[in-house]
Length: 388
Ligand code: GLA
Image 1 (spheres, rainbow, N blue to C red):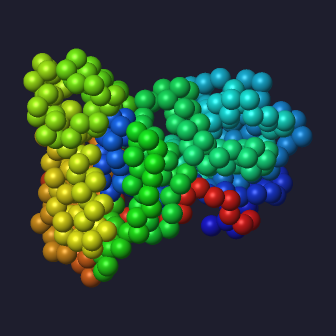
Image 2 (image 1 turned 120 degrees about the horizontal axis):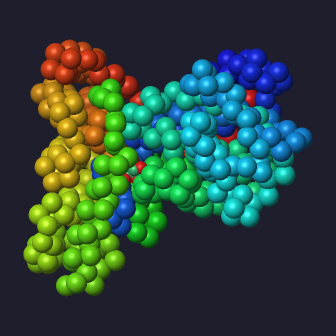
């Protein structure tokens, strides 16, 4: 991979790159739509992600090129003007991170030429945007010796996504992409930012990601709408109980206080967040005990809650998950990420994986009219410099 990217770099920028970096994509195993409600999430980093090859320049220009968007060519900006510009398309993600770090007072003396290449399917809900953000943050940190703590980098990238890009996401994606560890998932308490690495011992099973290939139009606005509904539920609850986040309540306490939420939709959203938080904690417990079957059943309950209470699944995701549950060798399956299209994550016994992909693939096409894509992924390390 790197050899080929070095050639591309040479062709585009006319010189050799000096350093190379990698930021993974992510998949969330359980704990969906809890990260902006002060709850727990349980994601892992993937072995696919974004590569960034770079060389410093002597002037204040930054030239950015993505092999994934080659028709857009080299995008050139100056360190003196890093404002969001629609015309810069994908390059607004790295620009956002550079801008946030600069505003935070980090010194960027000169510009650089950077080539990005991502092998995460774009817009599929595996966090290609957080991946390029974290890749940019490590590039700046390492080439300009900024010495920014890893968790701080994660927070700056989230800030770029929230304030510069305008998507009001929680911290999960940036966190796991920055902090992931090979063969481990991370239990992250998003309220306190305390985290534990949990070895992902799947015995004879593999993680299979299936992409609905549904176009995710309006996903960002629907995401922000769900956040608003959760906030309204929280405001109602705060009139009767002293809490800062929905996930400060367990299900018993929620039952006690839920009548304070007048709006039925908001009540359902809150029920999802709180029940999902409990499921996530249980899921980690049973996984540690080696009870994969119980883990799978919690994945099922998670999907049902996202479908019925949170209403972020839709026909394509539901079809993939329903088909998955009909296959032999299936341990668990659910939608992953924000929803409204995107991907499902399934844990499938290795000997049944090929059959699983074939059967689900055929039946999905028959039902939906177009194909799903499948990825057998491995759990990899978080963002890092790689040798060039
Ligand atoms: C997106 C957001 C995350 C999280 C998930 C849903 O991936 O970026 O912060 O809220 O949706 O769990």
